[in-house]
Length: 397
Image (cartoon, rainbow, N blue to C red):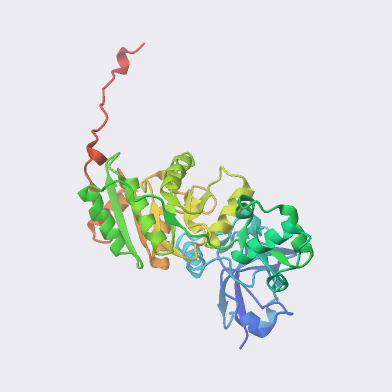
């Protein structure tokens, strides 16, 4: 039975997929094993473009002899998770947009260009792992690097630098075939401190969220300013980390990211990824790959981060869910809040929508019983609301 590759081609306005055959030099077993979410290079018109595998089908509406073969498979293992690949297919249909652009939104700029994922770690080769203990006696720095990789590998560049391992020693091990570059692996994550005591309303919300870990549920958290919504976010993320899972937090504006990151870094000893347009393209690509590899346990970003793949997605949080910044207004138009809810359904995890002034859509869904509605009516720690003074601008100079 032939294998048909249903491809999403970016850069064209057509709201459809294109069928291709596997590359002519690809083994049939390898072709059958391809999964949605990997990249391929395909002929498209007179051009050769990087495109994305959306589906593997058994038949096409076109005769097989009229289909062109793909030129190359760029990823043996899909870079998108099955949930995110499914999310892209859903978003293309729901928002009636060209699927190529939707799939492109889920990849980093580096990967959209066809480049390989960055390799920011080192591991031993088989030859290096079997090297005799008395080898490299005259190269102590190389021996030190080899021993470090034997104890724990792969080790990221920053971990090796913190251990005092010289780059020159690693490069020399690479030249000798004893070590090689690779993608960083997951790091352990833990909670530094338990956090303050919760008010009864906060504790009830945390308990309800904890009970829904591991399956889909949508929670609306409505709380006045200063009522402790962020503390509930932190408790939900801590519960994810204890389960060995990742958490995704969406914020509406770039300006909120630094203060959020500082507070989260104080609470968690865990690798974090930050995704927003204010960072350099290389930094965003590195953090995308940290999230997609599972190395980053906490991912914080603006609306486009809703598409970043997480192999162990445990919870999704949308802060200030009512904010208009979650709506993409040009190109591929979508609501990141609504996409987050759909993604949580596909990931089988809870999604938490937080706001002091929830949107009418969310209030309607809560009233209809689709969302669980939690209310925080008092400011945390008994703090009082700020004093307000009305100023008559007509009397101002």
